[in-house]
Every structure is written in structure tokens, then in C-alpha cells.
Length: 39
Image 1 (cartoon, rainbow, N blue to C red):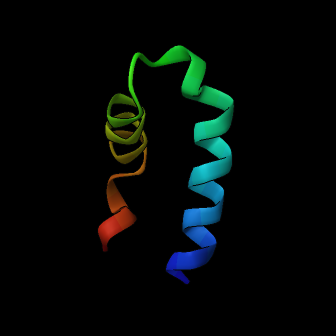
Image 2: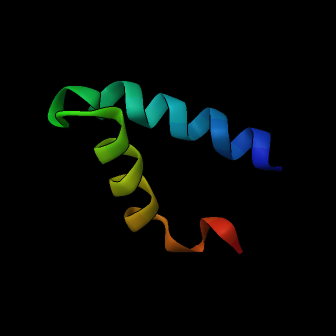
Image 3: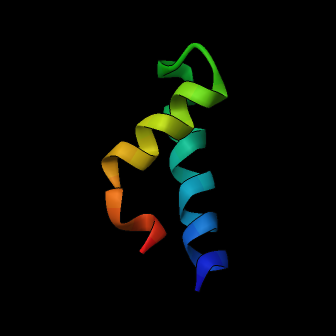
């Protein structure tokens, strides 16, 4: 199940990466967007 989510996250990051200065900021934003990801 986590692999499927990771594939979606990578796709989302590829579309959004230009909007962020670093990958870390992009990942942080993704986690803020999906707070239930660790549940």
C-alpha cells in the first residue's frame, strides 16, 4: 500500500518540483497536504 502512495507522491513531486527551492521543501509540503500519510 505504501508503494502505491509513494508512486503517487513521486508523480506529484515531479509536477510540483519547479515550485519548490529544494526537494525537502517539496516533501514537507506533500506531508502537510496529506497529514494522514503516516496513519
